[in-house]
Length: 236
Image (tube, rainbow, N blue to C red; front, side, top):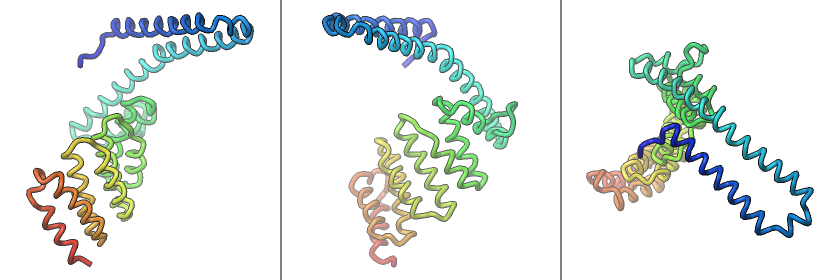
């Protein structure tokens, strides 16, 4: 879907504001007697409500929008460094001149781009072998995209494995396997959880994961799940 232009966005916000006050008018008509009885205290409440509404639109216009624009600029600069193979510059976080993904997250953590920066920074920290820092950064990422959330849990699981906390890694892989509606993503993390469960000699759990693959995701697995299910019978 095409993004709204600035004028179209302003027009949409204007319509929302008009509708908001129309709703207030309707409520006022419906509660005329109540207002007559409590006119003085309601005057204070209504005044506070209007201030809150105006404050909200001012915040959107003068704080959120510029912050998003600044965050995107900072993110793209870090992304450029990453595509050029300059991982340290992409990670950044050591100076205001080169914020990188770490600095973008620290400065704009309330924005979606800021949260995505924490994800990218976490992956780079993992690449450096700094697993706890990677985990902490990945944990700050959130999204409405279920596949990205699954990938977050999967990456956090890898960080826990790097810290030799494989039981915690398995719990995170279980989350990754159930976070997304995308069948291949679910298959991928279910299989990964099953293999880790086998390595931990948790045969019952491993069998659960591979049985789920056998039932739902045979198109992706080429029959491998049957071999893994057999393995659960003999590994101790």
